[in-house]
View 1 (spheres, helix red, strand yellow):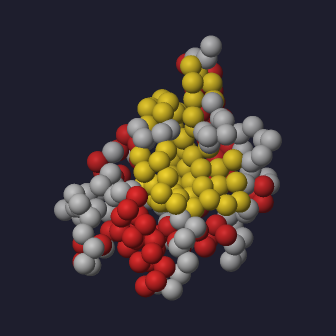
View 2 (spheres, one colour):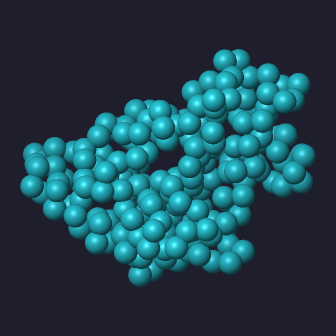
Amino acid sequence: MAFDFKKEYKGFYLPKNKPQVVTIPKANYIAVRSKGDPNEEGGEYKAAIGVLYTVAYTLKMSYKTDYKIEGFFEYVVPPLEGFWWQDNVEGVDYTDKSAFNWISVIRLPDFVTKKDFDWAVETASRKKKMDCTNAEFLSIDEGLCVQIMHIGAFDNEPETVAVMDKYLEDNGYVNDFTDERHHHEIYLSDPRKTAPEKCKTVIRHPVKKRS
C-alpha cells in the first residue's frame, strides 16, 4: 500500500476541531510563490497549482521512467498547502484578497533530493509543454505552532482564528508572525467537489511562549 502522509502523520494533517500546540519538524516542499487574489480566473494562483501538481506527479511516477530516485517508495501525493500574508498587516485581512502574498507548496518525501527535483522540473516542462521553472525546492522548519481543523468556507476562517487566539491567551502563548513565519493552511478537501460548509482546512499559526 502506498505511503500516505495524512495517515502516517495524523498529528500534523488531521488535528481536532479545537486548538492544539505542536512542534512541526523541518520538511522539503515543491513551492511556487507570488501574490494576488487566489480566486482570480486565469490568475497566478491557479497557474501555480497546475505547476505544483505537474512536478509532484512527475516525481511520484518517476519509478516508471529510466530515472531512478535512490530510496524511492510509492506514496500518495500530499495535500496542497499555502502560506499567506499581507504587507503591513498583522494576521490576515480577508476583505482584501488582492493584497495577499502567498507561497503554495506540496510536501516532498524525504528521499527526494534537489537533484531529483531539478530532474522533475525539467522533465515536466518538456513533456507537459508547461513552464515549471518557477517551482523551487524549499525547506521549511515551522517549529512551534498552534493548529486547528477548520470546517467551512474560507471566508469564515476568522471565527476559527478567534478560537485559536483565545486558546493562546488562556495558555500562555502569543502569535509569532514574522517575515519568515506565516498563516498556514492545509487543504484536505477539493473545493470543486465539496460544498463550502463541508470543506476541511487545517489552519496553523506560528507561536511562542508569552514572555
